[in-house]
Image: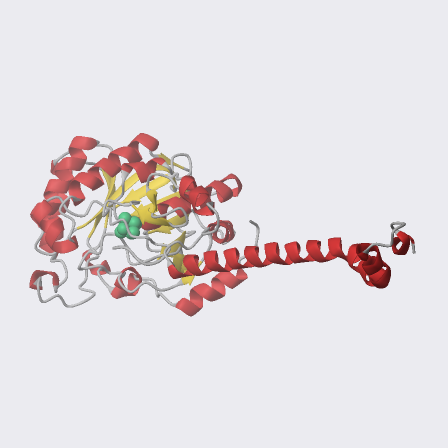
Length: 396
Ligand code: SF4
């Protein structure tokens, strides 16, 4: 009401106010609400556009699978260790490069596969295995967890159904820890991690969770093509190392596994394993609870290479346990190496066996040549492993 008589002279302004007083009052009351609402909508709109644009950029560069918003990639990058390196392509995009094994292929396993043929943690089989060495399997059996893929790819691989044609069930590190606890409940002598090299970082994390609750030894069953740096991360987590020492000659390992550096790498790895487990300790029932057992599979026509391996082992440690294996059989026909398309002759194995004693080795295991049959191979079946994992209780 007062607005109508603002000034005594009733000027034009006052006249205008007097005429439109009600409308002006409504505008005056609602103006702050109007301005506030407009600013609010503008800010929300801008934020939505920013988030959508960031998501599109992240999705476009699918290699940066995690954390493409506002520097989260920086944090993800910073978490990785030196074996799985991070490379920052841009502020938003971080690429992981795997250098976990001696192949050093630098694959981004969050977006694809490296030489080992696998990306995520892929379990192919969980079973009680009765055909390992007596100190590993014994009467109880060994609780094997087979991992898919392989970083070595021997041409004659007898487990090629899971190493060259990876299949199985993807699990998280926590789920793997659950699986290890479950395997222990099967009454086995140990937990036997088969072909673990290309997952050693994830296995180390799973073992850190499960190890305090494990009452049986953990066996690391590997091709020997392992980096010392990767093995160092397993210190205190692995009780028994079960490495192969497959080839001595760089030429043989180049032709049979595409790894001319195999002998150098594997002997350094075995030295590190021995450093971590300097004593071989067995329980009253003959099961190994700590130590190192080296396996060597004698190949048809490659007995001279076997002898060079025994030379090195005798020089390294005359007391080391060696499993001298004769179980080779041609899993596939190989036209490039016809000498591998047959089983081992008994005289070839006996020749290497005699050499074992001649060089002063005296601890170990031998095999009957008649054990060279597919009957002793595990049956790899996806359905099987999925059913087993479904039964595993969730702990972590
Ligand atoms: S573990 Fe696989 S991806 Fe990593 S370096 Fe070795 S082969 Fe390449």
